[in-house]
Length: 465
Ligand code: D5M
Ligand code: FE
Ligand code: ZN
Image (cartoon, rainbow, N blue to C red; front, top):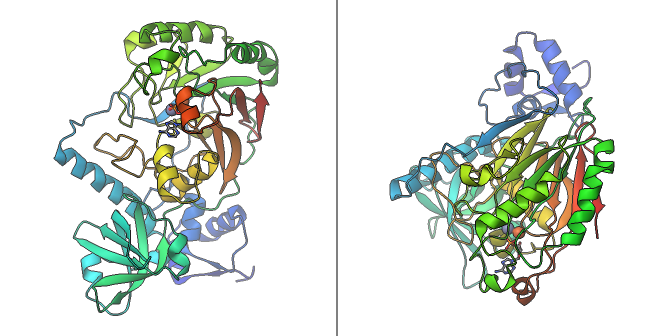
């Protein structure tokens, strides 16, 4: 109160439960991006839970000191795949998605006192519910009707076409919160608010003493006649000279390392190397030219020789052994920690579905699609579209930890941006326009390398055109 800041009753209780309440709250206030008038429990959680899943915000253990140059895998499906793909697996998979995102949503103050959908349907006052979206349809009068489901049952949510919510862009299989009133006629919730889990507002990476940089080289598509060899060579020259001097110590490759075989119609007409193993052998040779001081991290995409269903495991041993032993192979998606920074790398296949489902999104704005993933706390919400999902025990595509850096490839675009303190990177391609892409009017933005400084978070794009 001396500082002109108030605590909500719940926040006060939370603070008083700490060992040293005063220094706890002082530390919290210092970390907040904006000085609030009233501090809520949510504000405290946003500040102290970098991993927003931890229910009661237990103090995190002191991080183990990391060696310079060490890449730690925080989360990866490789070696942990258990599903067979039967109906029980699918039920469990979607249940895990629902429960995990529900936990994040439950902390939103807009959803305090949320209740099961079937129970809400019997009340007359304003209600709050959390559900997984089964279906979104437009009524004959142009309104939106959503069917959503929780553990206990289903219900309908109505969005009037005149309301501000008409641009909420609710999509199939995402988990949302709804605030609304029950319409007596029709037995549905008339929504006044759609609440997304989203990520907390944050000022972004605090400076660290790291002087290392990380470069992102995606969608190389080795084996394709459209592989941009000359531009690649130019990049390799940079990697062997200036990059080392500038402190580039890591190169991440977020998928579509080779062009693969049988991926799109008539692909064989554009294949220079028709044998998948030869494609990887050629890639391995190319990567040998990257100097030893740079740690390579290789992830699969939808053109690579692992299962197409996500999460995808890292390359099998028969492929991995073609490469230098220092190359690191990870799954897709994957959470990594490098010199204290948490990196979420995802090839980005789901963008094919998101650009179809969300009005206003397009292949030209992949960074916007990445923001939509963060808002929904899910990398590939839509099931049954172009992105195959494997029903693992846990939903590995839930964004349960807020990364410092979020990188994708796949759309053969190049860009860097930021969303609520998270550095967003889309990592270009080394493939020229294919005839298939020409048919779809898709224009790539090749031969660019985003480079992020792990100490300052600053990011630039090197252009090798
Ligand atoms: O995908 C590279 C890009 O090619 C992808 O992000 C958009 C474009 N593409 C691929 N398939 C289609 C369809 N069916 N319509 C429009 N654009 C498409 P890659 O994974 O490298 O093949
Ligand atoms: Fe690609
Ligand atoms: Zn791809």
